[in-house]
Image 1 (cartoon, rainbow, N blue to C red):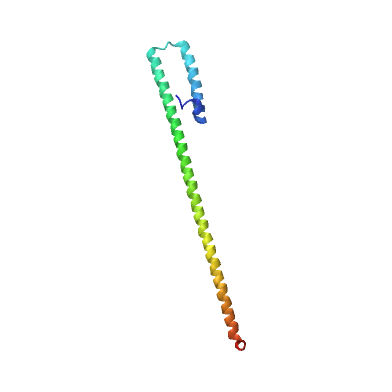
Image 2 (spheres, rainbow, N blue to C red):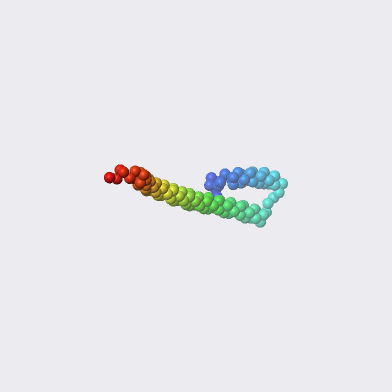
Length: 127
């Protein structure tokens, strides 16, 4: 088992495997003293151990693939969220610019109206 070696396994999986290995070793030690194992039984046990190794390898690969997928999704989410933020900020900055232009235009119109009102109430100044 190349990638499924204990060094490459996630911590939770390693802990579970170590506990099972310890239990299996204890059971094997008890059985070895009292039973003689046939070649056929030994082949069956080897097959089961190979199945365990393959399954462990598959779980490890699935976990790594899942991590990679979630990392990619996380990066895509972050990128999209930052883009939405940027667009919203730009929209609000544009609204601020428009409000300032509108305020400037309103101030100019207000000054013209104020002058017109002053001239309307003081017609003698026109001469």
